[in-house]
Structure formats: structure tokens, C-alpha cells
Image (cartoon, rainbow, N blue to C red):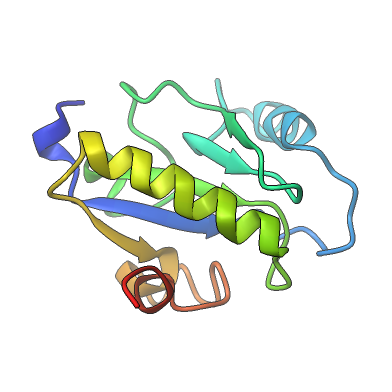
Length: 131
């Protein structure tokens, strides 16, 4: 993928319980167990705020139905109750990505695919990021 192709930095949730101890590595294994060659997200932000690189950034993600070829997928572990550390980690990851994909807009899945990404990641990412 060319950096000029990327229009969105799209934030998702893992849709796992907020108090679940599932690790990003286990989430990646679950995606593979369901038949995917790799994790469907490029980055995963763990509950402690650490970033895990999950999918090669040169490969389209599988996080959005209509926007896979023009988005980078970042997944927050949990559903809605994200930790302060996760929000800091997410902001740091997004800032780093914007240095490369400077034309991209930061959005939540529900903001670009309201029917498919309903309540994903559970808050208005663009409003949070651009405030």
C-alpha cells in the first residue's frame, strides 16, 4: 500500500469484555484460527497502553468492509471501558502514523461504516483525537 492511498486511520475495538485478560497475541491467534492468514488489524493497543504490531502495514487490513484498501486498522483491546494508558498509547500510535500518512483522517470504525461498525470502538474517535 502506498502512503498516498491511505485516507483513514481507523480505530476498532476487539469486542472482548473489558475485564478480559486476553492478550493481543491471543487475539491474533483467534483471527488465525478463524481462517485469516494474519491478524486483521495492523496495530493492537493493549490494556497497559503498549502497541503490538499485528499485520504488515504494506498489506490491506480486514477491519473495514469498504475501506480496507485505504485505511490502517488500529484495535483497542476491550469494548468500551478503555484504560487511560490505552488512550495515551492510542494517541501516540496515531501521531506516529500521521507522520507517515499525513493526509489520513483519524476515525472510529462506526464513523466510516455506521451500519457495520456500530458501537466500534464505542466512542467518537475523531472528536476525541481532534479536540
